[in-house]
Length: 70
Image (cartoon, rainbow, N blue to C red; front, side):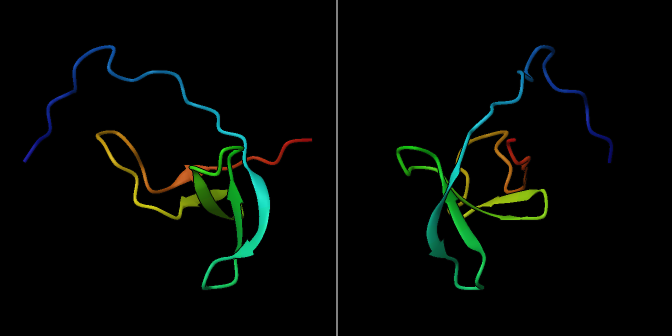
């Protein structure tokens, strides 16, 4: 089974979301980070950010790249 390429121009530039530590932990003990309004919450392990709620919609991924700010 081969996959055909998607519609040209479908991919946009990456979206940058800045998150801050919330002071809480996940069930497995990882720190929880959230954006300013608290609507986007992730756990960050190494350079991998995993959303704590399932992403909704086409093209959204459960695994994101995380980079600490200076």
